Image 1 (cartoon, each protein chain N blue to C red):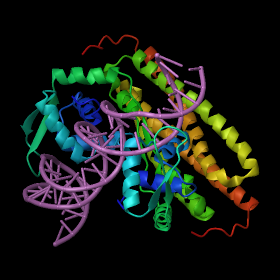
Image 2 (cartoon, chains in turn cyan, blue, orange, purple):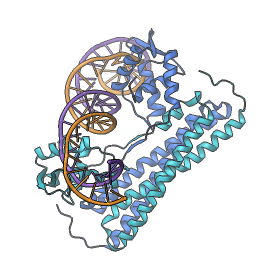
Image 3 (tube, protein in one colour):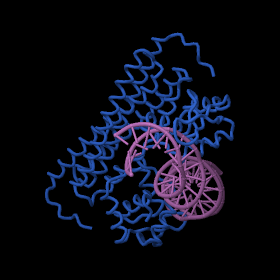
Length: 193
Length: 193
DNA sequence: GATTGCATGTAAGTAGTTACATGATTAC
DNA sequence: GTAATCATGTAACTACTTACATGCAATC
């Protein structure tokens, strides 16, 4: 298999627990995984095809609840071996790209007000994310009181909580600093191209 | 220009302050920007070519300190317009991908010890990052006491600080939770393929 | 004499996004 | 009747990564 086709490992990881269709896989990803790794149909269906041709998964027809025909995929023994190999090697790197920081970094020509409202929008977005993830967290805590199977899922949710909180803290700090410096230099007529 | 060729805007943003060669651009990115957006030579040189063909930057020869011939690029008026347009529109999205969370999410077949050491490696990495960024921060604070030009650069550094701290906090929390649950379920013989 | 830094770039490949295309069923 | 959900996929494109290729100058 390709060196780092992460989509393939996500699919194998999901199929390790249950048989799923491409559509089901997308739903699982969107409900639990997309917060730290997004995948679209344009990747899922082609990857299913290659995984099948490599013998790591098998395909079978299934009756669909409604709409077009449905195919269920299952992981094979070879697929489990490949998955486990991937799980055991250390992760290569994380991948974070913040367009907002890029824009701020280059924003000397932009007014303080515009920058502040950009940062506030960012803060509000992540306050909503934090609220949502807090609900997830409570539900998971209830589930885990009976069954600890979801411990690692819970850890990914806690990660989100910490990171969203960090974003919010930073946004508050950043707005305060911009305002402080605006007061220190109240007359800056150079804001033209 | 292409809808979202971020590399192009980074180059325009850097050239907005000073004339630079492709090599210089890479150095600037690696020293200040790579923490939130990495760019390689394989993107820089081709992008310089297209930006020049679009009239957003101009190229001229310059004497090189050593080694091969050197070209300096400058931003044009049209380039400044395009840059400002980009700076003014809201950012579309941030892009975070954490392979470590993916591996944890699927790690029910992996031993608690392996997961703990994975998380510890992550924590140590980010403790080093935090130390490094704290030095950056102090230097910048000294510079800013005289000249507030670097306020927005400083904000990106503060972002890094908050995020690295969040990573470290999470890692500590995660290891504690795994250990706690390990104690609750001391005999789990199912760890085979 | 070896390594690092300066400086240019290309080629091939992979991964990922976006838009398109189709169509049935169910709930409102 | 309209929107949402179920369900499949492809094509074109963009962005990005990795590996390669070259070679001088200065330092160790």
